[in-house]
Image (cartoon, rainbow, N blue to C red; front, side, top):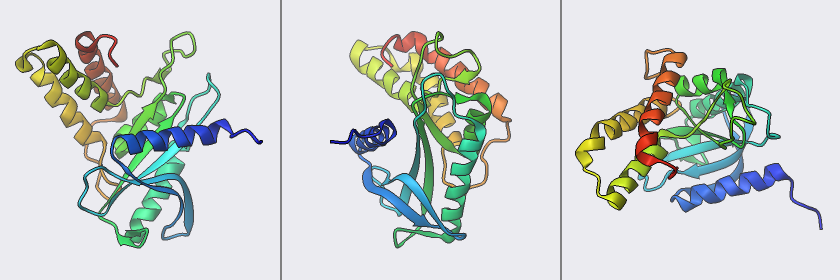
Length: 213
């Protein structure tokens, strides 16, 4: 019996995780854009959506020690733009098309900043400093910090007022950095500035969350 390639297993894990949080999995698909057809690993609908919204997910599996560079992300982004310009997906008129980039290794700074500027959500594996230098970004979604703060309040009875300001900033950051393909860039700040804000928010959340990431 042939063993499943690691990259395929990684895609299946990502698809299962999306299904677990309520996404309606459409499957691995060849989609038509204005210039031709493009292959995507995962096509799914967001949870509880009443519109024709979809998420296109790119899964990158690399050997530990490698990183994802900006050209990898730019190719994925251009494919989604091509699909969005067609105005429909899976025979449905397209309302919103969201981008999700999932990798088992970190993104380098230029790649991560490109995602922050262009509304691409990033999820990466976390590896210790012995594997990677300071030349990469952690890639922990701010939504994780937000949800863990809610858990902390429910679990330990912390006053909401103590963390409300941070939770509001996390929520606003998410809205600024994940949005449909067809929308204009929402932030006037540079990628470097947004990355600094992202790291600062995670540093502020860490003492409140501790090891419960």
